[in-house]
Length: 509
Figure 1: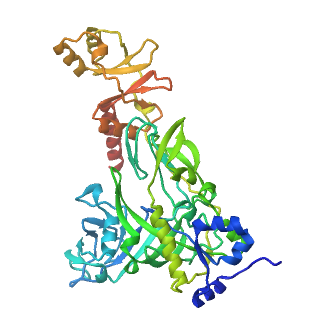
Figure 2: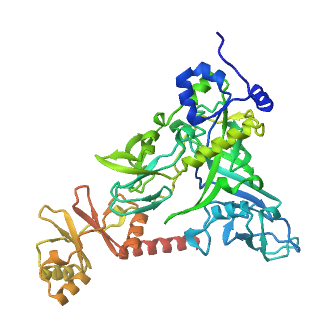
Figure 3: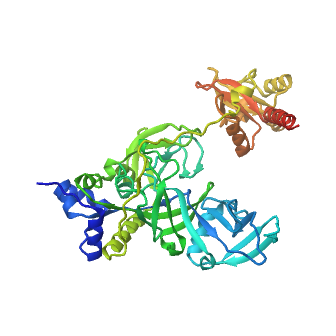
């Protein structure tokens, strides 16, 4: 018996005559398991996928039209959110992750885009430098989406094939683009639509490529090509997509804020997969149990964060996974309800003959990898400027002994060590003054036991962030065994920064 072979043209004919057979991707694994890939290819013409999650790399190209007299917008703000204007006189690109200048991380580009689609008025402010053909230097007005000549959503990176999930090994809460991560591995956050994920249903990009028609936030959109950071070798493929903002629905795009991090845009994106043969039928039968990703420790602020464990989307969706023998709750950042709604809406439009499939004009590359940034000037590290000769004191010492050591060393911070030489606390000149006033005798009574430390290989920039966050002026540097090997202070950092500024000034002269 000859294997089933269909073309996109044949499937489009079935869409137009109403005989097309469409299923959502989460049902396909059951159909293939029951019928086999060959029979499933005969029974199903289109598999619809969907995802609805935070996609920071999104935005809109806008044309405002010319004012009278005209202005060349040097800078422009929409509801106090700045858009990029370095493309033409009255064109701008508004990024979803751009923050408001007066509301900090509470409002930004994602909300402006949602407000535009919802028909709300947007306050526009712009300034220019004035030319003979564009004499105006400033303008303030109010617009709605209908007032714009064009508003084209162009998202550089959407629809990640999968996402790494995130956890936190440190003893403090972290606020990240993966949401709020509680201390000591107390939660895991993850994103992506699992079995509904568009790119996991077309692993080899046989049907998804440049020119593929997609569902984008309620409108018909298109795949422009590979997205930024496209890394199919590691199963992190991405798409660059475009669509007309004026045709979109606020139901399928939402501005959102991640507390302590910033603003994003939730994007509803769905792609129809034409089932041309049994090979494609088999690939669209992928299940949550088949999709593996990593749990990454975001407590380590490096480009290459450590992998805590591998996990399937089935495990993540169960709500509990195990880390180091403990049950840890998992939470999705994406909405599975809305992802399914995207796939179902796309199914309905195809069945009603309102959405035809398109042949890609070019396949997406399958061999690209995401490379790190090339850095020609390395950040200074803690080991490059830490004080190496550091006096320590025993936790059994008296207040008087600590006061004497502070006087001798002219240091305002003394690390306190245990009998085996490990850091157990820190005492400051202020602690000593307070202890004398309150007539304490033992050092153990007054020292700070929860000590913020630095690693010798840590970039100095991260140490500065620690000093600012905890409002402290010095950090002990410890080795892997908890022993003190140095000290980094705000005074030493200030000296280093001052030297670098003077050196840069000399170069300019």
